[in-house]
Image (cartoon, rainbow, N blue to C red; front, side):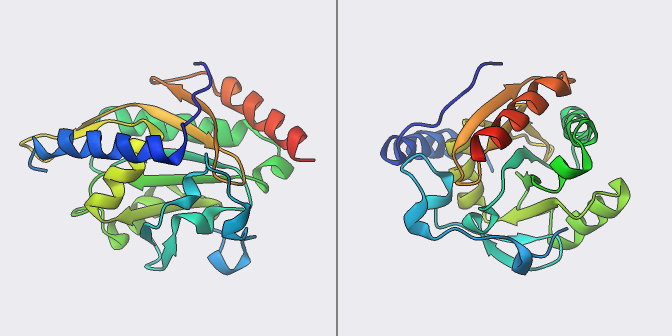
Length: 208
C-alpha cells in the first residue's frame, strides 16, 4: 500500500472527535530504562509522540507513548482474544522481523496495542507474549479506552466492539520513524513482508 502520512496534530484532533462520535454508537523486551529518549521539543507537528496518553506494558510498567521514541516502531492495534484477523496480522509482523538482519532487528521495535482495555490486562498480555515467544524488542500495551480511541484515530484505524465482545477493526500495520512520524502503512492480511522491510531499510539509510 502507499504511504499514509498523518496530518497536522490539529487535524488529528478533529479525527479523534469524529472517531469519538463513531465509538459512542457502540457499547463499547528491551527495558524502558535502556531505550533512547528524545526531548519533547524535538518532535515535529506530525509526530504521534505529542499525545499525552499513558499506557501499561505487559510487565506492568507505566509509560507514555513518547517513551517509544528513539528507534523506529512497527505498530499494530489488535486484541489477544481475536481468532480471525489478529493472528494473521501478528504473524505478518513476525515475518517482517525474521526478514531483517540481526543488526537491523536491534534497531527497531514492534509494538502491539490492544483495543480491548478490559480483557487485555497486563497479565493477559504477558501470557500472550509467552505463548508466542515474542522477543524483547516487542512492546505490548494496555491503555484506557479513551487513549486507545485517540491513538486509533491518529493511526487511521477504525474499530467497533460487537455484542459478543469481539472487535471489528481495520487491518493496518504502521511504521513510525524514531520521532513518531508515520512514514508507511500497509493494510490487509498476509502482506508481503518485503514491502515493509524495504521501507524499514530505507528509513535506516535516511537516519544515518
